[in-house]
Image (cartoon, rainbow, N blue to C red; front, side, top):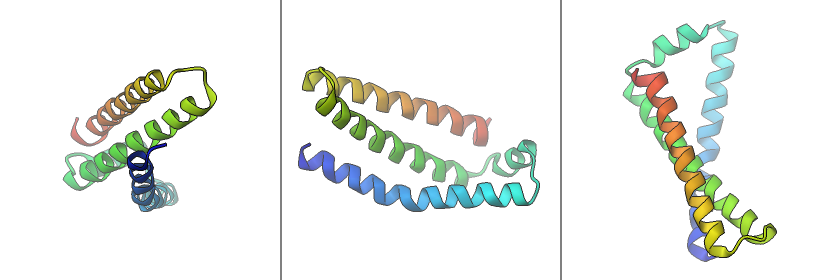
Length: 109
């Protein structure tokens, strides 16, 4: 792996650690309070804070996971490095699109 990808993956890992902890804490809070899906959606609707939080989460996950997949494909599959790069980029774009759709559905719709 080149140093640039190494640094991007480590940087997104540092970013993801607190994001995941907050996400899990919110899940625990919602379940302990007995909140239904409708309750959660009513609290997140039109919230720029939650939209920004999850946009950062989705961006970090998309970058982190696509770099990890690229490394796995490059080391363990018969794919050429160029094909592994292309597949990882498409995977990252797919994750970003699915995440953006989820943010839209939960916060903006």
